[in-house]
Structures are given as C-alpha cells and as structure tokens.
Length: 252
Image (cartoon, rainbow, N blue to C red; front, side, top):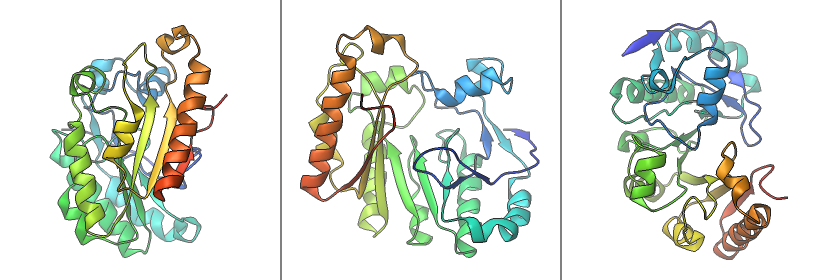
C-alpha cells in the first residue's frame, strides 16, 4: 500500500456533530459516487488528480508517531475523536488501514480518549476489546444492493454493515447510523420506514440530504421531500427511544 507522511494528525473538525478527528488515509477504495464530498475537496486542492487515484488510497505512515506526540499536548481539550471524516477507517480490501485504525483506537483509549467511528466497511469484532466509551456507526442510505453497487461500488454490503453494527450493539456498545446522503426518488424509489426498521436497535440516527448532485434539484418538490423525511425520522426516533440529529441544510 502506498504511504505518505504528514506534519500533523489530530485536528478540530468543523463538522457539526464532531469534536476532534483523525484522517490517517488519503483516498478511499470504496469509491462512492454520490459524488463524495471528500473526493471533491481532495481534487480541488490538488491532493489527488483523478477518481482512479482517489480509489488507490495512501496510508499516513507516520500516523502513530504523530499521535504519540500530539496526544499529551491536546488530550485536555478533546472530548472524543472521530474516525474518519474524509476516509474510511475500516476500508474493505485494505487490512493495513484496518490495522492502523485499531492501533489508533488502542492508543487513544489508553489515554482515556473515546473514539467515534463511522464506516461503509465492516466493523471488526476485535473492537469489542476496547473501551465501552467508544461509539461505533455505519452509513446506510438504502437496502437495495443493486443501488449500492452503483453508488458505493467497493463498500461492504448493507447487510454485512448492519450485522457488524448489531454485533457490537449486543456487546454493550453505543451505536449509530448515518442516513446520509439520502437520495431523492428520481435516483431511487425506496421506503424510509424499511431502512429505519432495519436499524431500530441503534442508539442514534443522523439524517441528511444529498448535495452536489444535479438530479436532486431536478426532482420537483425536493425541498418538501426532505422536510417530510426529516419529520418521519424525528417521529420514528421519538417513538422508539432513539436519539437523532438532522443535518444542517437538510430542512428548508
């Protein structure tokens, strides 16, 4: 696997539901085609030249060395660290990434820093060995595998994601699902209730609309569509005792 070096690793994120984050990989093999905002940013700022390059990720070879230096300086400011916002910590096909992610979780936990993880891969069962303060999540925008193969071509199947999340939930971990970026009906016709019913065991659901895709604005009434779905998610969560967060700019 390709390696790169960086001068820093831990940083405060601007994401509305995040605290600190670590992105210890450049690129992502999953190759999501929503399009992926992380890829758009990386291409805009010259970090990658093409989608093909993005799908051949490079790991930060000095990640653990940086982390050992940064934790003592920053730990008093940190509530939690998210893995990851611009890549995937449990990337299919790249055991080096998964191994590095677990080492990072171990190091953070040994310094009493909890981790919040989000993946379109499979959450390793080994995570049950780490702090019960950790929170584990998956992205799930559909249950249709044909759609997944188009939009998230190299990611894990939806059922494998859900099963790995359920396993950790049953082991006593706090779990969550990001239903974002949720597509409009002219992209795929689907029933949000079926998705919610599949994940009704989780502790939190985050819902957000699809951005940066021209088909969304081509769908007549897309603003009303997202308003209605946000209301459905909120009511469902309240009725089932699930915490929730509706992403900014989802509701008009």
